[in-house]
Amino acid sequence: MNDSSYYVPSAAMVIVLLLKGRAVLRAWRDPLLRSVYALLLLSVLVFFFAAPPTIAWVNRVTAVPNFSAPLVYCLLSAFSASCLVLIINWRGGPPEAARRASRRWIAGYAVVIVATAALFVLGDAPEQRLRDFDTHYANTPFIREMIVLYLVALTVSNIAMNMVCWPWALQVRGWLRVGLLVIVAGFFCNIAFAATKLTAVVARWNGENLDYLSTYVAPAMAAAAEVVTAAGFCIPLAFQRVGDVWSTWSTYRSLSPLWRELAPLSDHGDRTVRIAWWSPAELQVTQRESDIHDGMLSLYPYFDPTVRTRAYEAARTAGSAPDAARAEADAAMVTAALRARAADPEGTVISAAAAGNDGPPSAAEGPRDLVAMSHALRRSPVVAAVREGAVAW
Image (cartoon, rainbow, N blue to C red; front, side, top):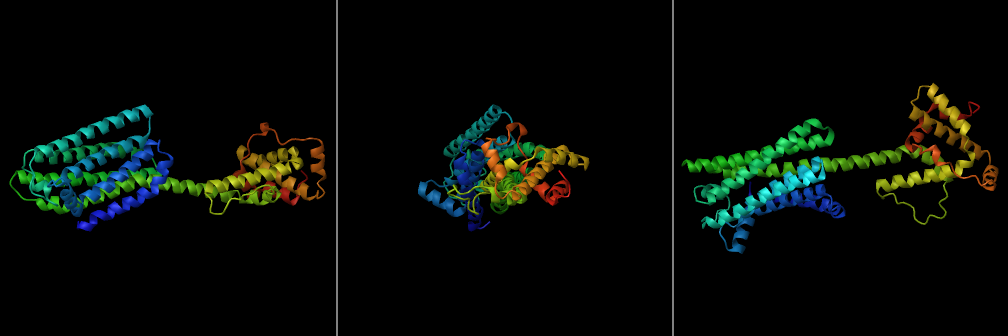
C-alpha cells in the first residue's frame, strides 16, 4: 500500500460515521448503536494512525522515536474489543449477561493495552521505522514481546468472533446472514494479517528475511479486513432500514384505493398544516390512515351492518379466509355507504343521525385492517357486486 492508500478507507469510515452520528445521538442509550459507532470510529483511527505520514508526524510531535507503534497496536486491541462487544450486543440475549460478557472482553483488552504500553517503555527502539517496525525490532527484548502480544490478541479476538458469527449465520436468513458472512470473511483477513506478520517476525528469529510479508503483504490484508468487517456490521443495519422504508411506502401505496374513496369525505378545513410530499414515509402513512378514518367517521350514519354480514357470508362461500372475508365485508359496507351517501345529497340520513345522537361505531367491532380493505376494494368480486348494485344487499 502507498501512503495515501491508508487514508481512503479512513475517509470512507468518516462518511459512514457522519451518516450514523445523528442516529446514535438520538438513541445513545442503545448499546448496539454505541458499539457500531465505536467500531467505526476505531476503524478510522487505526487507518489514520497507521499511515506512514501520520506515523512520522506523531513521532515528531511526541519527540519519541516509534511512539506510533504502540499507539497503533493499542488502537488495534481496542478495535478487537469493540468488535466483540458489538457482536455480543447484536446477537441479543439477557441484557445483564450481555453486559457481563462485554465488561469481561473490555477488561481483558484493557490489560493488553496497558501491557503494550509498559513493554514499549521497558524496551529500546531508538531508530524510527515507518514501515518495518515489527521485523526490524523482532529480536529486541520487550519490544519483541510487545509485537507478539498485539498479534496474539488480534488473532484471539478474530477467532472468537468467527466462532460466534459462523454458527449464527447458519441459523438466520436475509441481510443478517449476508452481514455475518461478510464479517467472517473480514476476520479471516485479519487472521491472515496476523499470521503474515508473525511469519515475518519468526523468520527474523531464525535469521531469515521475509520482511516483505510484513511490510507489503500484511498492510493490504489489514486494509481489506477493516473495510470488509465494518461493511459486514453495517450491511444488515443499513438494509434493514431500507427494508423498513420500502415496507412503509408499500403500505402507503396499498392504502391508495381506500384513501381515494374516503379522503374527499374528510374535513380538512381546520387543519392548518398538511404533510409535505418530502416528509418521512411513516408520517405519510399516518396522514393517509388519518384521512381514511376521518372519511369512515363521516360515513358512519350510512353503514349497514346487514350489508357487512351478507358480504362476509358471500366471501366465505367464495373461499376467502376469515380475515380476508372480514376485510371484504368491511370494504363492501364502505362501498354501500358511499352509494347511499351519493343518493342522499341533502344529508337527510346525517341530520337524522345527529338528531338521534347516534355515536360512532363501538370499540367492540375491533380495529379494521385498512390495507386488506383497500386491497378488497380493488380486487374482491363481492365488493364489485356491491359497487355495481348487482345484488340486493
